[in-house]
Length: 294
Image 1: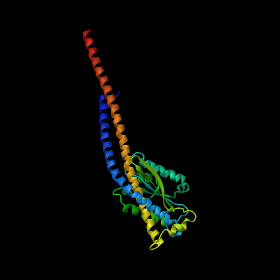
Image 2: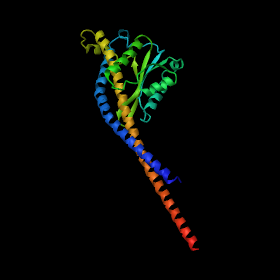
Image 3: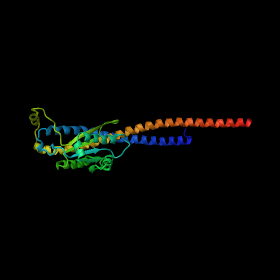
Protein backbone atom coordinates (compact mmCIF):
# COMPACT_ATOMS: atom_id res chain seq x y z
CA UNK A 1 0.00 0.00 0.00
CA UNK A 2 1.40 3.48 -0.90
CA UNK A 3 2.38 5.83 1.85
CA UNK A 4 0.10 8.59 3.12
CA UNK A 5 2.36 11.27 1.65
CA UNK A 6 2.32 9.70 -1.83
CA UNK A 7 -1.47 9.39 -1.85
CA UNK A 8 -1.96 12.93 -0.57
CA UNK A 9 0.41 14.31 -3.21
CA UNK A 10 -1.50 12.52 -5.95
CA UNK A 11 -4.85 13.81 -4.65
CA UNK A 12 -3.52 17.37 -4.87
CA UNK A 13 -2.21 16.72 -8.39
CA UNK A 14 -5.48 15.25 -9.67
CA UNK A 15 -7.46 18.08 -8.03
CA UNK A 16 -5.36 20.57 -10.02
CA UNK A 17 -6.13 18.60 -13.17
CA UNK A 18 -9.86 18.84 -12.43
CA UNK A 19 -9.60 22.62 -12.19
CA UNK A 20 -7.78 22.79 -15.53
CA UNK A 21 -10.15 20.48 -17.41
CA UNK A 22 -13.20 22.24 -15.95
CA UNK A 23 -11.86 25.61 -17.10
CA UNK A 24 -11.10 24.27 -20.58
CA UNK A 25 -14.60 22.82 -20.79
CA UNK A 26 -16.17 26.21 -19.98
CA UNK A 27 -13.93 28.02 -22.47
CA UNK A 28 -14.81 25.53 -25.22
CA UNK A 29 -18.51 25.84 -24.37
CA UNK A 30 -18.34 29.63 -24.78
CA UNK A 31 -16.46 29.36 -28.09
CA UNK A 32 -18.81 26.61 -29.28
CA UNK A 33 -21.84 28.89 -28.98
CA UNK A 34 -20.31 31.47 -31.35
CA UNK A 35 -19.02 28.84 -33.78
CA UNK A 36 -22.37 27.01 -33.77
CA UNK A 37 -24.25 30.22 -34.54
CA UNK A 38 -21.89 30.93 -37.44
CA UNK A 39 -22.31 27.53 -39.11
CA UNK A 40 -26.07 27.44 -38.45
CA UNK A 41 -26.51 30.75 -40.25
CA UNK A 42 -24.13 29.84 -43.07
CA UNK A 43 -25.30 26.29 -43.86
CA UNK A 44 -28.73 27.08 -45.49
CA UNK A 45 -27.16 29.70 -47.76
CA UNK A 46 -24.31 27.41 -48.82
CA UNK A 47 -26.69 24.47 -49.40
CA UNK A 48 -29.08 26.51 -51.54
CA UNK A 49 -26.26 28.07 -53.54
CA UNK A 50 -24.83 24.63 -54.23
CA UNK A 51 -28.26 23.37 -55.30
CA UNK A 52 -28.75 26.26 -57.70
CA UNK A 53 -25.27 25.73 -59.11
CA UNK A 54 -25.86 22.02 -59.72
CA UNK A 55 -29.20 22.67 -61.43
CA UNK A 56 -27.78 25.49 -63.52
CA UNK A 57 -24.67 23.53 -64.47
CA UNK A 58 -26.93 20.73 -65.65
CA UNK A 59 -27.99 22.95 -68.56
CA UNK A 60 -24.40 23.52 -69.69
CA UNK A 61 -21.93 21.46 -71.64
CA UNK A 62 -18.85 20.60 -69.60
CA UNK A 63 -16.73 22.56 -72.09
CA UNK A 64 -18.51 25.78 -71.10
CA UNK A 65 -16.98 25.83 -67.60
CA UNK A 66 -13.38 25.06 -66.65
CA UNK A 67 -14.51 23.94 -63.20
CA UNK A 68 -16.98 21.36 -64.54
CA UNK A 69 -14.62 19.57 -66.90
CA UNK A 70 -14.19 15.92 -65.98
CA UNK A 71 -10.95 14.36 -67.14
CA UNK A 72 -8.98 11.21 -66.42
CA UNK A 73 -7.88 11.38 -62.81
CA UNK A 74 -4.10 11.12 -62.71
CA UNK A 75 -3.25 13.69 -60.04
CA UNK A 76 -5.31 14.30 -56.90
CA UNK A 77 -5.33 17.13 -54.38
CA UNK A 78 -6.71 16.44 -50.89
CA UNK A 79 -7.70 19.34 -48.63
CA UNK A 80 -7.38 18.16 -45.02
CA UNK A 81 -9.01 20.28 -42.31
CA UNK A 82 -7.96 19.66 -38.70
CA UNK A 83 -7.41 21.79 -35.59
CA UNK A 84 -4.32 23.62 -34.39
CA UNK A 85 -4.52 22.21 -30.87
CA UNK A 86 -5.17 18.84 -29.30
CA UNK A 87 -7.11 17.75 -26.21
CA UNK A 88 -10.21 17.16 -28.36
CA UNK A 89 -10.44 13.38 -28.32
CA UNK A 90 -10.19 11.58 -31.65
CA UNK A 91 -11.19 14.69 -33.62
CA UNK A 92 -7.94 14.95 -35.63
CA UNK A 93 -7.10 11.24 -35.74
CA UNK A 94 -10.46 10.45 -37.36
CA UNK A 95 -9.81 12.92 -40.18
CA UNK A 96 -6.38 11.44 -40.89
CA UNK A 97 -7.86 7.93 -40.89
CA UNK A 98 -10.61 9.00 -43.29
CA UNK A 99 -8.02 10.45 -45.69
CA UNK A 100 -6.04 7.19 -45.60
CA UNK A 101 -9.21 5.18 -46.22
CA UNK A 102 -10.23 7.39 -49.15
CA UNK A 103 -6.81 7.11 -50.79
CA UNK A 104 -6.73 3.34 -50.39
CA UNK A 105 -10.23 2.81 -51.79
CA UNK A 106 -10.92 5.65 -54.23
CA UNK A 107 -7.44 6.64 -55.45
CA UNK A 108 -5.14 3.63 -54.85
CA UNK A 109 -3.30 3.93 -58.18
CA UNK A 110 -2.66 7.65 -57.77
CA UNK A 111 -1.51 7.11 -54.19
CA UNK A 112 0.95 4.37 -55.13
CA UNK A 113 2.30 6.49 -57.99
CA UNK A 114 2.90 9.42 -55.62
CA UNK A 115 0.46 11.67 -57.50
CA UNK A 116 -1.44 12.79 -54.40
CA UNK A 117 -0.82 16.29 -53.02
CA UNK A 118 -2.19 17.90 -49.88
CA UNK A 119 -3.47 21.25 -48.68
CA UNK A 120 -3.38 21.19 -44.88
CA UNK A 121 -5.56 23.59 -42.93
CA UNK A 122 -4.68 23.13 -39.27
CA UNK A 123 -1.41 22.45 -37.44
CA UNK A 124 -2.20 18.81 -36.66
CA UNK A 125 -2.57 17.91 -40.34
CA UNK A 126 0.47 19.97 -41.32
CA UNK A 127 2.66 18.29 -38.72
CA UNK A 128 1.52 14.80 -39.73
CA UNK A 129 1.96 15.14 -43.50
CA UNK A 130 5.22 17.09 -43.39
CA UNK A 131 6.71 14.66 -40.86
CA UNK A 132 5.79 11.70 -43.08
CA UNK A 133 7.25 13.37 -46.21
CA UNK A 134 3.98 13.83 -48.13
CA UNK A 135 3.72 16.46 -50.85
CA UNK A 136 2.15 19.44 -49.05
CA UNK A 137 1.62 22.25 -51.56
CA UNK A 138 -0.03 24.64 -49.12
CA UNK A 139 -0.10 24.68 -45.32
CA UNK A 140 -2.18 27.35 -43.58
CA UNK A 141 -2.13 26.92 -39.81
CA UNK A 142 -3.43 30.43 -39.14
CA UNK A 143 -6.70 30.09 -41.02
CA UNK A 144 -8.66 29.63 -37.77
CA UNK A 145 -7.13 32.74 -36.18
CA UNK A 146 -9.92 35.12 -37.04
CA UNK A 147 -11.66 32.79 -39.48
CA UNK A 148 -13.22 34.80 -42.30
CA UNK A 149 -14.62 34.40 -45.80
CA UNK A 150 -11.63 36.34 -47.17
CA UNK A 151 -9.18 33.72 -45.86
CA UNK A 152 -11.29 30.89 -47.28
CA UNK A 153 -11.51 32.72 -50.63
CA UNK A 154 -7.73 33.03 -51.00
CA UNK A 155 -7.28 29.30 -50.32
CA UNK A 156 -10.11 28.39 -52.73
CA UNK A 157 -8.56 30.59 -55.43
CA UNK A 158 -5.23 28.76 -55.02
CA UNK A 159 -7.00 25.40 -55.39
CA UNK A 160 -9.07 26.52 -58.39
CA UNK A 161 -5.99 27.92 -60.12
CA UNK A 162 -4.22 24.57 -59.72
CA UNK A 163 -7.21 22.69 -61.13
CA UNK A 164 -7.67 24.94 -64.17
CA UNK A 165 -3.92 24.78 -64.86
CA UNK A 166 -4.11 20.98 -64.96
CA UNK A 167 -1.97 20.44 -61.86
CA UNK A 168 -4.79 18.33 -60.39
CA UNK A 169 -7.57 16.35 -62.01
CA UNK A 170 -9.68 16.00 -58.85
CA UNK A 171 -9.88 17.82 -55.54
CA UNK A 172 -11.34 16.30 -52.36
CA UNK A 173 -12.09 17.91 -48.97
CA UNK A 174 -12.01 15.89 -45.75
CA UNK A 175 -13.29 17.44 -42.53
CA UNK A 176 -15.56 17.02 -39.52
CA UNK A 177 -19.10 18.29 -40.02
CA UNK A 178 -20.87 19.71 -36.99
CA UNK A 179 -24.04 17.90 -35.93
CA UNK A 180 -24.25 18.76 -32.24
CA UNK A 181 -21.91 19.36 -29.32
CA UNK A 182 -21.30 15.65 -28.80
CA UNK A 183 -21.42 14.35 -32.39
CA UNK A 184 -19.25 15.18 -35.39
CA UNK A 185 -19.71 13.54 -38.79
CA UNK A 186 -16.69 12.80 -40.96
CA UNK A 187 -17.19 14.02 -44.52
CA UNK A 188 -15.18 13.53 -47.70
CA UNK A 189 -16.61 15.75 -50.44
CA UNK A 190 -15.56 16.25 -54.04
CA UNK A 191 -14.62 19.89 -54.45
CA UNK A 192 -13.58 19.83 -58.11
CA UNK A 193 -14.71 19.16 -60.74
CA UNK A 194 -18.16 20.51 -59.94
CA UNK A 195 -20.65 17.64 -60.03
CA UNK A 196 -23.76 18.55 -61.98
CA UNK A 197 -27.19 17.23 -61.11
CA UNK A 198 -28.16 14.49 -63.54
CA UNK A 199 -31.53 15.49 -65.01
CA UNK A 200 -34.09 12.92 -66.00
CA UNK A 201 -34.86 12.23 -69.62
CA UNK A 202 -36.42 15.29 -71.25
CA UNK A 203 -35.87 17.44 -68.16
CA UNK A 204 -32.88 19.39 -69.45
CA UNK A 205 -34.91 21.53 -71.81
CA UNK A 206 -37.59 22.16 -69.22
CA UNK A 207 -34.95 23.18 -66.69
CA UNK A 208 -33.42 25.64 -69.14
CA UNK A 209 -36.81 27.23 -69.78
CA UNK A 210 -37.27 27.93 -66.06
CA UNK A 211 -34.46 30.54 -66.10
CA UNK A 212 -34.24 33.95 -67.71
CA UNK A 213 -30.54 34.88 -67.99
CA UNK A 214 -29.34 38.46 -67.88
CA UNK A 215 -26.78 39.29 -69.20
CA UNK A 216 -26.08 35.69 -70.29
CA UNK A 217 -26.00 32.17 -68.92
CA UNK A 218 -22.25 31.82 -69.49
CA UNK A 219 -21.36 35.04 -67.61
CA UNK A 220 -23.63 34.17 -64.68
CA UNK A 221 -22.18 30.68 -64.34
CA UNK A 222 -18.66 32.09 -64.67
CA UNK A 223 -19.28 34.23 -61.58
CA UNK A 224 -21.49 31.77 -59.71
CA UNK A 225 -19.21 28.72 -59.75
CA UNK A 226 -16.17 30.38 -58.12
CA UNK A 227 -18.40 31.99 -55.52
CA UNK A 228 -20.07 28.67 -54.76
CA UNK A 229 -16.70 26.92 -54.40
CA UNK A 230 -15.43 29.58 -52.01
CA UNK A 231 -18.64 29.30 -50.02
CA UNK A 232 -18.33 25.51 -49.90
CA UNK A 233 -14.79 25.73 -48.49
CA UNK A 234 -15.80 28.41 -46.00
CA UNK A 235 -18.68 26.23 -44.81
CA UNK A 236 -16.31 23.28 -44.34
CA UNK A 237 -13.99 25.47 -42.24
CA UNK A 238 -16.90 26.70 -40.11
CA UNK A 239 -18.13 23.12 -39.68
CA UNK A 240 -14.68 21.96 -38.57
CA UNK A 241 -14.27 24.94 -36.25
CA UNK A 242 -17.56 24.26 -34.47
CA UNK A 243 -16.87 20.52 -34.36
CA UNK A 244 -13.48 21.12 -32.76
CA UNK A 245 -14.96 23.09 -29.86
CA UNK A 246 -17.72 20.53 -29.43
CA UNK A 247 -15.21 17.67 -29.38
CA UNK A 248 -12.95 19.48 -26.93
CA UNK A 249 -15.85 20.35 -24.63
CA UNK A 250 -16.98 16.71 -24.62
CA UNK A 251 -13.43 15.42 -24.06
CA UNK A 252 -12.83 17.85 -21.17
CA UNK A 253 -16.19 16.93 -19.64
CA UNK A 254 -15.25 13.24 -19.67
CA UNK A 255 -11.76 14.01 -18.36
CA UNK A 256 -13.25 16.01 -15.48
CA UNK A 257 -15.64 13.19 -14.57
CA UNK A 258 -12.84 10.62 -14.70
CA UNK A 259 -10.58 12.77 -12.55
CA UNK A 260 -13.32 13.22 -9.95
CA UNK A 261 -13.83 9.45 -9.81
CA UNK A 262 -10.08 9.00 -9.39
CA UNK A 263 -10.08 11.49 -6.51
CA UNK A 264 -12.80 9.47 -4.78
CA UNK A 265 -10.72 6.29 -5.14
CA UNK A 266 -7.58 8.05 -3.91
CA UNK A 267 -9.38 9.44 -0.86
CA UNK A 268 -10.63 5.96 -0.06
CA UNK A 269 -7.09 4.62 -0.39
CA UNK A 270 -5.82 7.50 1.77
CA UNK A 271 -8.36 6.74 4.51
CA UNK A 272 -7.47 3.03 4.45
CA UNK A 273 -3.77 3.83 4.68
CA UNK A 274 -4.43 6.28 7.49
CA UNK A 275 -6.50 3.69 9.38
CA UNK A 276 -3.73 1.12 8.94
CA UNK A 277 -1.16 3.59 10.22
CA UNK A 278 -3.25 4.40 13.31
CA UNK A 279 -3.82 0.71 13.97
CA UNK A 280 -0.09 0.04 13.79
CA UNK A 281 0.60 2.91 16.18
CA UNK A 282 -1.96 1.54 18.68
CA UNK A 283 -0.50 -1.95 18.40
CA UNK A 284 2.96 -0.61 19.07
CA UNK A 285 1.74 1.32 22.12
CA UNK A 286 -0.12 -1.70 23.50
CA UNK A 287 2.84 -3.95 22.83
CA UNK A 288 5.18 -1.54 24.55
CA UNK A 289 2.90 -1.24 27.57
CA UNK A 290 2.63 -5.03 27.92
CA UNK A 291 6.40 -5.32 27.70
CA UNK A 292 6.83 -2.82 30.53
CA UNK A 293 4.22 -4.61 32.67
CA UNK A 294 5.77 -7.95 32.02
